[in-house]
Image (cartoon, rainbow, N blue to C red; front, side, top):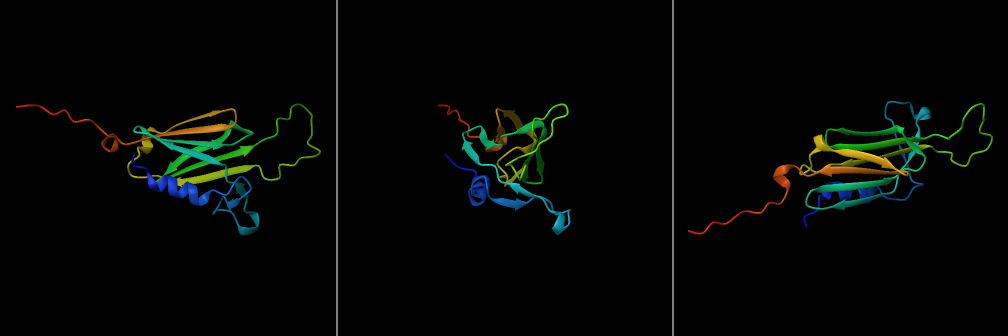
Length: 143
């Protein structure tokens, strides 16, 4: 099966586990820059397209962003503590609450039909292949 090398190569080069940090904003000043955790991902491919599974525990749907800019897919999320009422956090071990990861999409993929779903801290992004990139069976006639 032909792999969409651009997506997979970018993911493998960026993989270093959940503690690796990258800058998330070029619009902020250097002293104001926020570092983000690279969420661990698994990438699968079949004839229909690519599926990206990203572990983003603690991120709610409201704090999640999935966007395509040009040929880049960007996933971002912010972890918020589930505090209610007049409760106040007095101790916390999660110092960095931002997730961010980007991927370069192959031209074989159709970014206009991307679907994303968040369940149990796992973001599932389905990226279908463009119709012309999908394998098709050609009927052979006799005569």
